[in-house]
Amino acid sequence: MRILYFDVDSLRPDHLGCYGYDRNTSPTVDALAEEGRRFTNYYASDVPCLPSRTALFTGRFGIHTGVVNHGGLTAEPHRHGTERAFKNHPDHRTFPSLLREAGYRTGFVSSFPQRHGAWHVLDGFEEWRDPGGEGRETADEVVPHALDWLDAHATEEDWYLHVNVWDPHTPYNTPEEYENPFADEPAPAFPDAETISEQYESYGPHSAREPRGWTDGAAMERTPDEISSRSKFEQWIDGYDIGVRFMDDHLSMLLEALDEHGVREETLIVVSADHGENQGELNVYGDHQTADERTCNVPLVVSGPDVEPGVDDEFHYQVDLAPTLCDLAGVDWTAGWDGESFAVSVTDGEDVGREFVVCSQGAWAAQRMVRWDDWLLIRTYHDGLKALDPVMLFDVAADPHETTNLAREHADVARHGLSLLSDWVDERLLESATGVAGGNPSSPGGVTDPLWEMIRDGGPFHAQGHAGEYAERLRETGREEHAETVLARGGIVEQTAADYLDGE
Image (tube, rainbow, N blue to C red; front, side, top):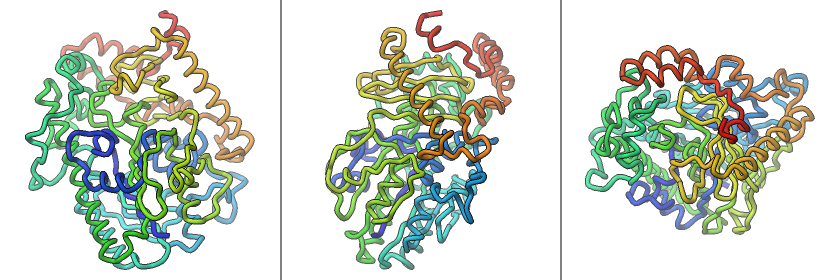
């Protein structure tokens, strides 16, 4: 089998036509979805970038690998400990390593390992090509490396090629000569002018007042330095959508290359993302700072031989892709993964999935979310210097942009969500202690919750040590009350879930 995985950083599903977006951002992905299978409730278990791709390649939750952050001890996988074999723990192999062992040629085109010092994700790749921009390169700088690889290997029988592009990720640096294909098209209705006005007076890294962070941030020629009005937002979201369309054009080039080599019809094509992107939800713009629907829900489109066309609405984790790809490739996979294969959905359209999913955020805040039915519950332990309640409950069907916290109004539903979350954590830590699924009790720190380790070590990487600096920024911009809140809390959310729901 030939497998092409197209990995788009920061791509939210609802900015693709096949997921209902009005703008023509994704004709290539849309065509793949039309002929293949599209997944609507597919979630990155651990976000953002480093935790997500660690989970993807290892098939294991961050609570088991220890990777939930972008820096410090919780940005490195737990060591294998006394159970380490000649290479790695035999039950904790990455899926590329299993494919390669089974005779697949494996290639990786990405600057991600260099950007994050994430050398563990290279396990199993025979060839790694780094475009050299540490995530700042555009698709026209990435895809030529992939085309070269295909020229050399496309006609071979069994291969896996992973291509990572960054264009929807800030700083929205699509080449200026690409212009703006959406200049005359209306922007999404959310956020409206009233929401923007309220957010502008609030606070948080990458909020409406400082969408590039509270310092100058990266140069972003296509976007404004603040979102103070609908026109500013329209300029901002154009920058994001242009990046989506630019990556889509370059995906088309890869498909054309497969056609030229005569293997397009025999290649399984997977399009997905490491995480989504908030564009005003929870007052975060152009970033992925929360454990919520917009950051954790990612697109998944699968097209190719033996794929049953249609739509899968069941709940799946990104960690489920490792065993799924192995099943589709006819490769035995390890019992040491947390992932559960949904290959029968891909090939036969069967309804298989999870009852609910739990996702973590550890780089910009310390949060876990649980998603079930139409409900989304978020529990916040460290707010990352943002205006976040300890418990948030949203009806994502009625309120997809998470504007109204229903936790107190529907306290019984919130308590049910908290119970699901608590039970899930208990089960994962029991696995950690007993070596079941993704657990590894012989590893130092292997039986602890890495979110608590992260808080012990100073908090989310991107918020560490910035409370005083940000408070000064808030004072300078007339938000003294928020400055005092930031300094008083330092990010730590001390109020218990019970007290919050009781209104105390």
